[in-house]
Image (cartoon, rainbow, N blue to C red; front, side, top):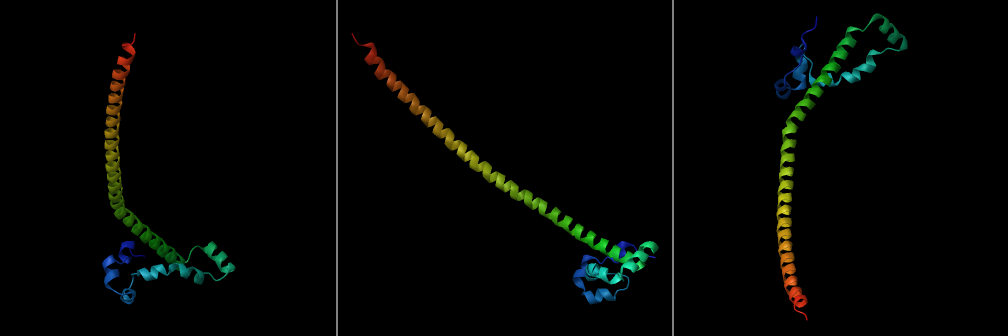
Amino acid sequence: MQEPATSSLPSSSDRSSSSAHQMEAKEGMESDEEIRRVPEFGGEAAGGPSAQASQRKRGRSPADKEHKRLKRLLRNRVSAQQARERKKAYPNDLEVKVKDLEKKNSELEERLSTLQNENQMLRHILKNTTVSRRGSSGSANGEGP
């Protein structure tokens, strides 16, 4: 006769507003500290090799089932918290990426403008140099005897 998993989980407001002692006083509810202690419980349940073999034959004891359930709850809580943190971090990461790309785009546009101006100036110089060479070399070659 187990209670539903949701009823045995303390809410975040319970965890932040009450101490661990108050939570342990509530019957049927495990505190985060109790659940975090679960991995230490594993060594106490095993009596020896013969006890382990007999347990495999008979199935899991209620204490082992509860231990396994608490471990699963802890893993689930940790996983859910990590998912919430990733969900919060994702928009921030996108904002940083947008700012970086906008900065890079601005730098590239500035570089493009500089190179276009330089190219236009060099074309103008080349045109003036070519026209002046034709004029001076054309008159020297065409007017000889």
